[in-house]
Image (cartoon, rainbow, N blue to C red; front, side, top):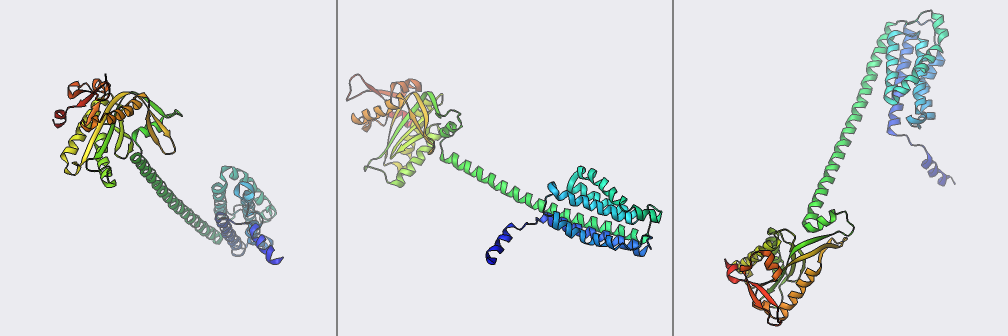
Length: 401
């Protein structure tokens, strides 16, 4: 029973906050200084009231009893009662000393300072009448002496010294608190700066990993997160090694990186990759011209770099209305949809079936040729497998030029 009950008492024991502990120590210091002034007045100045043992005991034990009874309460609750009792005690001490001038100024200055710092103007207004009640409680002593605003050099000097010591102590405490607040503010600022740096890095990483179109769709207020492109230029690129069936992983990664750089430079954005296949688009006004320029640069790049001589590039160009949509928000997956995309895939299948792309690297639809504004750059080729269907192939001389 005893072993089990002891921890429970500890759990429910009131905990004193650092602020309350400092207030308690300050009150003990203040009470000791007030008692010293009172003793100096009674002994050194031959006060007519004689020795007041009961008042000495009250001043001596008051801060400990007050802290034990009311010290655990916050200043907003019953903690202000202790501050008012401080005023009552100071008033009683001043009344017992026949309201001395300099000690009175010192003690009243200290108590008023405490009231304003800890309770504000409201506590000061309530505390002043309480202070006067303490003075009036000692009226018989004042009446016996017959003097007000008494003066005692010893008590005056001691009161002045106490006031300076108290103010220096309070100044040190305030300095320490300001130092703690400054350190806390510095830590908070460092933490805030670190969080801001992390946010910036995360945002940069997001922009690097997510396409611009995905970012634009994320910013839209629509729940569908889609955008209609009236006249999108589409490119379906097929990269194949000439001496084998598929690329090695490292070769494909290097080739795709080079293609992405060239396509981005001309304003085209990659939507999908599958092996050596790349689906990209441009939503700009001059999308078809940009796609044609990117195609020429891709062909020139593969021709100029010896390490890419083994890569065969096949491109199909088309243009038309398209819808750009985020089909999976969790993965930030963006895709193209619409009749134009379906036509592009179907044209790629036809070109593969008719074996036309084995001879022609770049094929375009009539819509793309019209939109590009450069019909002279293409040759008209009848489809070998389909009647009444023609293809437009980019001239070889145009690529080399």
